[in-house]
Image (cartoon, rainbow over all chains, first blue to last red; front, side, top):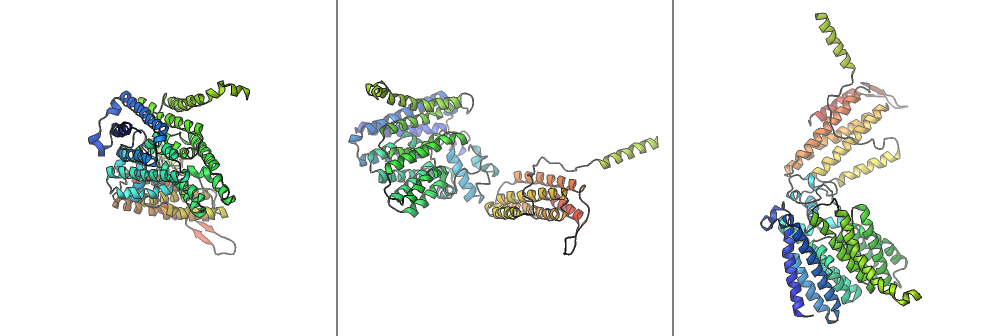
Length: 373
Length: 175
């Protein structure tokens, strides 16, 4: 890899981390000195920079993937480390404010000694987080394992909001790092870790925004590894923990039943990953019924797809990850969840994977081979 | 003229003394009647509700739990009184009182922890008003006392009026 590309990537990450602070909420008084108001005053400009950033992110990603001949494990790590270190300091609530919900639930349990499944943040009327969090009227949405886990970053934050914000991010990033390690252990394939670790959706939704989906996925991937190593009890325990992070991995229950009934013998792991990807993609689509499909839900199926060698599936997943990241654009531009925003979200999400699918199928459709078949 | 004024006044008092009156009104919404006593399902349901006490930890949690339980037993008592099940209704009302008495100390404890309890106080005030409204409506449909005479067991005299009045007093102390 050319040094200039490497350094330009690092420079780009630094610029993106700085740009992320354009999204600071005006009511977030803890970061008042960094508030510029640019996002609310100049939505077109900010949206333009955001779209450009996504394109650059994907350009680097594709460049690194295509340049894999020159890549070895050491070089991949040399790309992952600066990504983590720089993006750790990016402002997390670009469009999603979930990190504030995590802190609020944690605070309700560990500071106020109340049950976050019963007491809503809005019930604690003097709570400063209410000024800028976006789901104050909801009780905790996540599993109890996650709520208990959040005690670690909460106490490491020493009751300081800014420190807590970044300890939460750091906590999630730790799971991102160990997930990469588990993917490596499962696949022994540099491409798999490169595909997952440097995917812009994974970076933005995990390292920047600090979504807890990676914690759930780490636990389930580790349970797969334990199952591979014939440690069934440990695998089941980790699987249960994973379910009680965000519930979505319950979809993989049929596979664990299969592992037990097959006595963990002669398992075709390629097929297991394919089925896992299919099941997690199904619940990803079903999330539409609950609320809507959020970009970070893609983390549920992406590791399983990148554990395989199905090129067309990998290309489609990358295209979908780009489409999913564009879902934030209509709200960013229009500033409303209503009006044309929902329809535009669907259009931007579907169009890129659809175009990619057509591009993948077109040569087959027009080839003589296709007609002969 | 004096006779006319006295007649109008008397008629006015006479008419209003027959109109069912409610001195307390509240927008607070009570729950639907839940499982009624008399079956195994009630015992299971009560066991579950008792277990929930540990789920509703924290002072705000206990505030919610005790208010919920007090509401549940009040609605149960009302339903049972309406169906002339006086002994069961009597017991349910006493249980509702037991839970209601526990509510305020949890709010005080929450305040001592530095929590803002103003919203909870409003909820408790509204709930107390609604409870009083229901209890006052009960006085018109239940006898003052009732002699409960089960088979082969000593009879029990239920002082229903007294327990209702006592229940109202308990709620009034939180107004």
